[in-house]
Length: 116
Length: 114
Image (cartoon, rainbow over all chains, first blue to last red; front, top):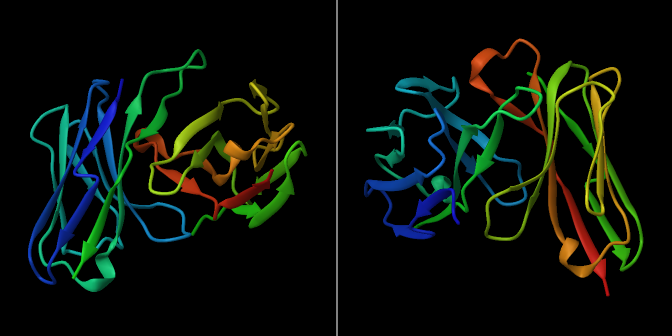
């Protein structure tokens, strides 16, 4: 069963037209992350929520915003997408302590954004 | 900033061969994770390592947390075509607190010839 769900899997938007990407989780994890991944590169962290506390990475552009209305859902809003924002956007959650007492990060399948 | 150096960058091997890849850093980590990413999909966790010196297996995969806490390797034995993909190491730095923020390696692209 899917644990981290991202919809849609593919999103096409126009240059400058706001777009929202969605993530939901069935794991009841308290931490959720948004990453941007461009072709052949590692995922790049944009921001994360620890419960309702929002934590922005220093180099994340203001064009990117996020909302987390409840534990299960988190949204990525791109206010004015540019051509350079075309990428795979990955949502991840963290929780579920292992026997060692350390939490592990789990990724969703991603949403591929195309900007025309 | 902190970096993970992952090598090799790419590998092209024959089916049945063993594969080894590693990540090194000048920083100390308290967690090492190995992920596999297929084209158009999100990374899937393969192995998680939490203690220095820890050696963990998952089927044909074996990974170790280096004793210095600055490196980790992943081995794949008897490779098969479905092993094709990009493998990422990721580590959580000591002192990163509750954020769980991961530092990623650059990835190793594996291709397997049947």
